[in-house]
Image 1 (tube, rainbow, N blue to C red):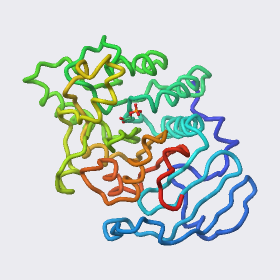
Image 2: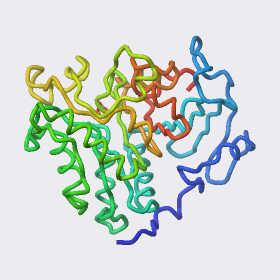
Image 3: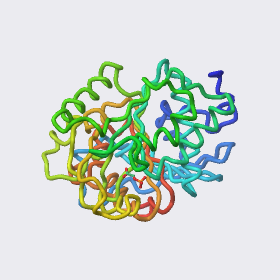
Image 4: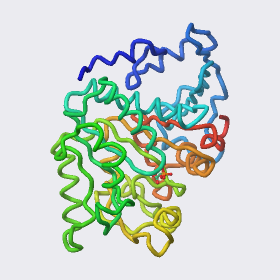
Length: 331
Ligand code: PGA
């Protein structure tokens, strides 16, 4: 396998995803650049009324960056980048390109991976890159976000089954480098298993990239909405949790009815998610629009777990489709 990443050479803009320089962009408002980008100044008070800016990173103004091709970028003070694609397929291709960049550029990359319907096309793109010989997974170490509890890895609703099916069994990642929380550990050992999983991430040096979806209720992993002080909410350990009613109801069709949905799960906590060196969060469809707006334009709160990403805004990139971005004020 080669790491040269031939796909990169034709990409525009030429700035790297993780090192893109907003200061440079701010110097060029209104200028057309060859390659199809226009920088347009919009209201500097882009953040929704009633939302305190005091808890937010400093903003230098708000821009919409428009592409003549398939995406536009919103400049919000609550994330490093917010990119709205014309459809979810384009967003997933961009996500896969960015993950591939990390795999090629970081020695021994540590990835935090997500499940759910959202990232399935991302994994398909990564498998295609592997099959074309442009991506090598032999040095990748992955840590999945969550798993139902209890559940067998043979159950096709388990996240171990999902990851084997959509990624692991296709890309030659060594079995002892592809970690998923174990839904079969004895009840009395579940807490210790979760703590041990967190220690594995720590001893691997933390996550180079965390891939996330978002629940309709704003959850990330299975960190569910709760009443809790902010300081505690951003420091939650990997642990066993009780699933939120919205999460269980959304999972009911896949499990053949609400009664078959597990009541509990294991999840990586906000502490590790927020320590990741890069966070890539994907949201598609109108049913995610409220959660996206609350996460990016509401206050950081335990009641909308994805809003906690605002506390590490400079490391977070949101990839949206038009439907999930529809409730962002000013978009
Ligand atoms: P979904 O789930 O991708 O199936 O919508 C996302 C999530 O709950 O994180």
